[in-house]
Image 1 (spheres, helix red, strand yellow):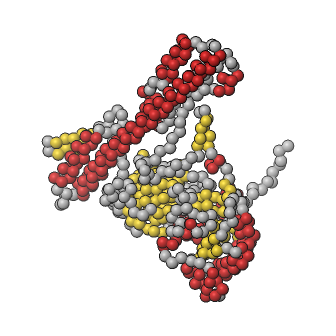
Image 2 (cartoon, rainbow, N blue to C red):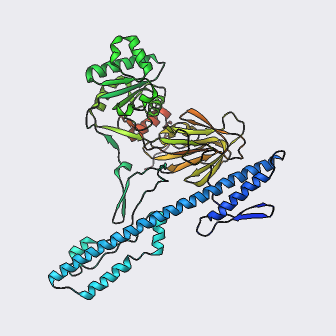
Length: 537
């Protein structure tokens, strides 16, 4: 399942057949050569007896299978690139035609205005039209840049202010290079999502407020339905839940959902709780986001993780109360739950959008990258480790089909920024503000002292592949559960999910984050250095 870049000539010989494949200057491999190369590899594998031969030939045959797959994927990539280039060319031609028509209309209007004023000059207008045609002639260099990078710079912007300030020079134009920003996805079912957070005007790039401001939530209508999730096997949590449910129903007149287990506990305590609603099966859980306006969690970070895992799509705002042993996502204290919920229900409230990872397992027998198992959403991290095997893990890592590295060690952690203070931090990763959209790439006990953690942008897709020459399979776990085995040839794809988890803040996202690392980790807590020498005057 791993993509490869063929930077050097590869040759496969079988009897009198010798097929070579080299990389031409344009960076794309000829599809006919790739077809013959793959065919030669298949014939070599069929004619070479593997049974009874030593271990080196077995590893060599597995390597040839990997190369054959890479050749096939390179051919598919070339076809996709050609289709994309054709589409870019078509868009460019349409845009160029539209610009020519608009400029000609402007020239006609200008000519009509000049005729009305009596200062019409035929020669001047003809020269102007010729310049217009020349300006809109397709330039080979700019067309290639437009198709390759999605950035167009062939237009001309007028400086309208200078036109209005000088009547005699109204035909002069202030030329400034313009461009277009475009977003792209890998196919219709791609795992990269549009985020309209960048805009431009007259060549000046600016970012939208979403990336640089605190986020506030204001209710347009009053919340009507709440979902309460609790930590199990806790007497104090059970008592608090009963008090909170009674107060929300009697004082706030709200509809309340709880888990089936919690409803049984409440009805055991008193039959007055028969107004509490719950669900019967998983199908009703998938529709919870259409009924619930707000989620309340009573527990620690694990309860928040459980609440997020219940929603496979959009997630309602979560108000997490701290009733666990350690909490980086639970800023509210249960002693003051009435005041807190009054403030939240009244609004507005500051929230933190905690990004999630969308993980998909692609087996070796899959037809393509979209033939995957059911996707899994994680709020903290996905961990790929060696399991019970005594061998080091051998993982090939790619970022948007670009080779990153080969992991040899105990494993690898792909973490969100919300999970940066969890397993990733224990493995040597950095603490990152949860509002930063990124993917943390953290090795676990690597067999190299120079292997340091990385932080990748949110729009990339990370591919982890177990190569065919791996001594043992790997194991992947998602937020500490749903453990899956990854055999040789299997791949794990991780990208940023389009549905973040909004959690309410006590103050704001930055204040809550700093307070959590100070209180939870005692970050940089040390005794102040004493002063016992003479003071400088």
